[in-house]
Image (cartoon, rainbow, N blue to C red; front, top):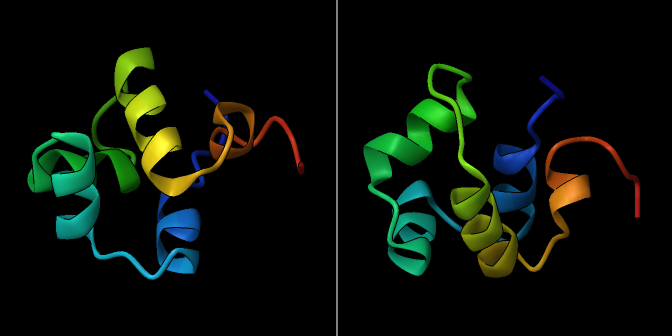
Length: 66
C-alpha cells in the first residue's frame, strides 16, 4: 500500500475531519481511521475524498507529485 496523504491535503484545504466527513458522506470516525492507517480505503471512498479535496487520486495515494 502506498502512503496515503489524505490528512496532509485535508489540512492544506483547511478542513477538519468532520468537514471532510460531511463533504464525502463518510463517517468522521472512518476518516480518522483511514488517515491513521487503521482502516483500508475503498476506491469509492478515495473518489469522494479526491473530489472533496480537489486532489487527484494518484496524489492522495502518493503516486504522483502533480
